[in-house]
Figure 1 (cartoon, rainbow, N blue to C red):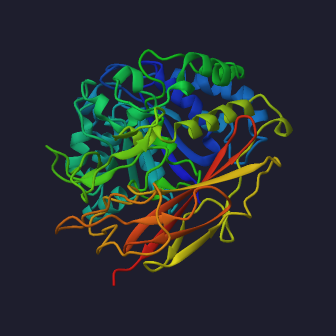
Figure 2: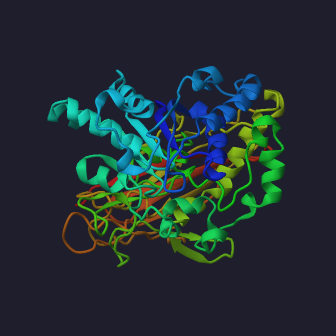
Figure 3: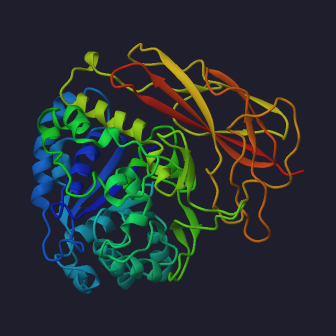
Length: 486
């Protein structure tokens, strides 16, 4: 699938986590086309920007690039990335946004140039700090172009914001109502961060909002052994003051791991799951959190079996449910920076029903019909043994306006059920709650299963292919079952 184009807005050096996220971004950058690395301000660093810290991390990346680049195609050179480093407004929020077109910041110009480039792919603007660089870019475009041109420009942008870290988020959502915006509105002072989905990356202990999450792969011991000990780039993964990598969810979901959550915020993946709704106090809907917990209504929370063996329901669970996999991925990539290809582990390659790769597979079916899902042709590039597991993801795909995930009452079929049976549907644009899109899997392990829908609608089944390398790596595949209403 085409790689995602990204522009990073980072208040790096205000605390350690931006630098930590930058290290992971660089070793994952074979998955992305980075088109801007912009040093910005935020509520935590209001009057200065630190591009020098970005360049310091790039210097370490340059040292490991010759080894890292042998493991996968697509890693940009350090020189190419240095050319993308620039700055946003050197002041806080809207007050620092230039209204003079010949005085806009290099970061704002970088965004404009990226969006204007002749490329059909949208540009993801990932706000790790304040968002006034994007505000400056859009304000300039609105002053200098016709209304239709502005709308076309806005339609090419995707924003994932790590809460509101200055006052420009509310302005952007209000002034550009069609802007694709992912994130939870908040005060910029951090008082509401504990509510945010992104804290599911590692915030269990700091925010005390991760009941059920396994913190093992963020302990100091694990980080020292698997990240910080891995060469010059690992040494720049500095230990946190608060949480590890609070900004990482903005790009985790853009990695092409087979979950393809970049196709829709409702799909759920390493960057979390979001629904389309109008948050209280906002002037329009956006991709955000919340929603009605009443059975059959959309909400942004996943229910996941935690490390304690009990079910836990939260927004943060939409990220921490994948933590073991994305941390093993990170550990492997850090090993790539210092390890020859023949001595390292690499991801399995999935093939489902003859379709190799990461793209979702859509299967049109009918209620009661057993759909065969065959992943036996999947392989491992290192010759490792692979094992297969499957699960029904009931919350995935909910929260899309006018697209109910289930319609009509469940239909009784043979074959019994399993704990994968059930789910939370979309309620549709109007009308009463709808029953769940129920799916029965005949087994949860093995290369070949059957999935049977009990209810009309749409449902997502996830395949996980794990190898036995060190660290073990997981490849995913999303299968979307569609059964029309009678």
